[in-house]
Amino acid sequence: MKQTGAGIALIAVGIALAAVVALELAPGDARGDGDNPADSLRYLEQFGQLFVYSGLALVVAGVALVVAVLGVLRILGTPSLAYSAASAFGVLSGGFLAVSGVMRMQANGTVPYIQSLDQSWGEAAYLAVQMAGTQGLLSAGMMALAAWLVALAILLIRRGSRAVALLALLPAGMLAVLVIDLVVPNLATDNDTVSSVVYVIYILCAIIGIPVACIGFGIALTTRRIQARLLPTTTAG
Image (tube, rainbow, N blue to C red; front, side, top):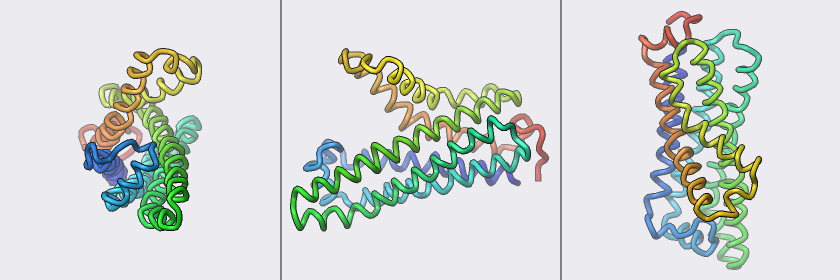
């Protein structure tokens, strides 16, 4: 069934993103500060293959996400213009995640080679991967994914599946932190306690909320009993 295919793809997104988190945490204290190029060059030297695996997981997540987004659109047949527009965030997210993953996979060989030519060049090369890949593409991908999950939740609420839609609360929290930061830009930086709380909320929403929401929505799409409530305008088969 179309629902099942989209659901399996969405489950794959959640599992792949959870794998990225696990791979990031695997080295423990040996990982060092991810924003410190000296620490990160040592990390690549000792655990470079983990960086490759996390990149591969991001590529899998990105490709599976595009399949899931297009699958849901196909299920709906003629969705509203608002949801169609929101689906663009899902497709963009898939692209961002995949490209950030490719950057990680390539960095394991390229960055150490540049470092062998000059230490400062190696640090600059890693910072390029960090800023463009992690802070740029990966962050944008996660934000866009959160936006699509919230749009999907709104659609489910309109179709009468309010309990399932609750899965989007944590991704919504991630977007709320972004909005608050934009509206009150110095709220976190002016107060260490507030900064710590905001950071913890953002991280929990990103590394737990989004994978859980993806897996939960995916399971819902693969469950026959829920399919009729989720997408009552479609037929199974």
